[in-house]
Amino acid sequence: MAVRLGDVAPDFTADTTQGTVNFHEWKGNGWAILFSHPKDFTPVCTTELGAAAALKGEFEKRNCKMIGLSVDGVESHVRWEGDIKDVTGHQVNFPMIGDPEKKVADLYDMVHPNANDTQTVRSVFIIGPDNKVKLTLTYPASTGRNFMELLRVLDSLQLTAKYSVSTPADWKQGEDVIIVPAVSDADAKTKFPKGFETKKPYLRVTPQPDR
Ligand code: BEZ
Image (cartoon, rainbow, N blue to C red; front, side, top):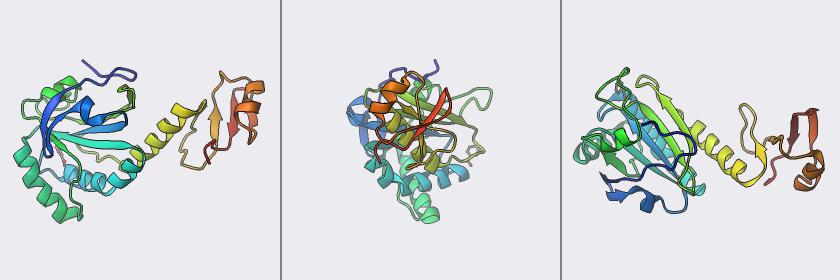
């Protein structure tokens, strides 16, 4: 069954390149990003894993653990990681789930049979401290993901979890944010002491509160 926003992320125990992982236990009270790759030793996936490894420090700064999955076994992942280092210069520095029986892939609905009935698509799940799914994203096998965009989304999710704000199109750290419509103007004056601009009655912007 599909895993949707607000659902509790299904728990699982799986073999990974860093030993057996019980997902909820491993995640703890922080954030996690879980992403799937169609297959080992494939070109786009190789570049993606190098890009993801390069950004691990940035995810860590945001208290977010990374974990990848491909429907091959752990021994294959370990051999593939040598190629990833050769090609991208980055050692994969987070656990990669071995899922040859597609147990985790099925749990998270990562196999889309009308796209490919044996491989996973490129799924992403960002999971919050409450173990609930905050973001889902699905790309086809032919399109590599942008891990900087995933960091940007994480920044937005973490900001909106803390303040009564949303983030506009293309928002980046440090830019103005939107006050949610449920906050009255009177309350906005106290909640957002830096002030706000009313562009339309339903669109009020304020400087990023934690900056
Ligand atoms: C790739 O990573 O390049 C890829 C994987 C599976 C199918 C097509 C492309």
